[in-house]
Length: 112
Image (cartoon, rainbow, N blue to C red; front, side, top):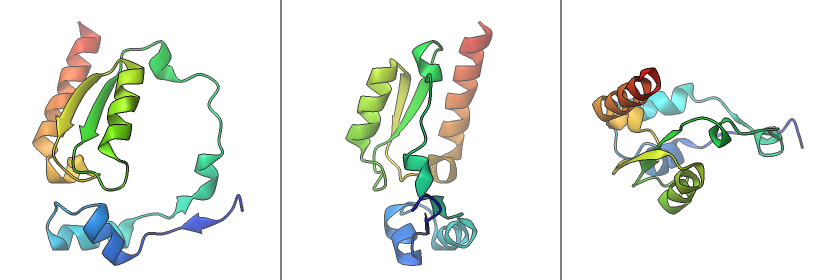
């Protein structure tokens, strides 16, 4: 089982992963996606970096891959600076300017 991999079908990608990007872009995401290695769910982390470092978290309010409530809970547990966008699982494709601004804000906070 550790070597098993899974790949989302095209319709799943279009409807539940990148539902807010143009169809042509959704098809590129499907064609270039790598398979999910099932072992990702079994790997252990010794110490999460967010326990000792400042964190930022972008909640995808329209995400159909990871429920937004789960994302909000993770952000809260991390005490992360949080930005909520109404988008799919891939805000870097659907709202790239907002993502870039959020990253720039995080980088500036670290430099300060």
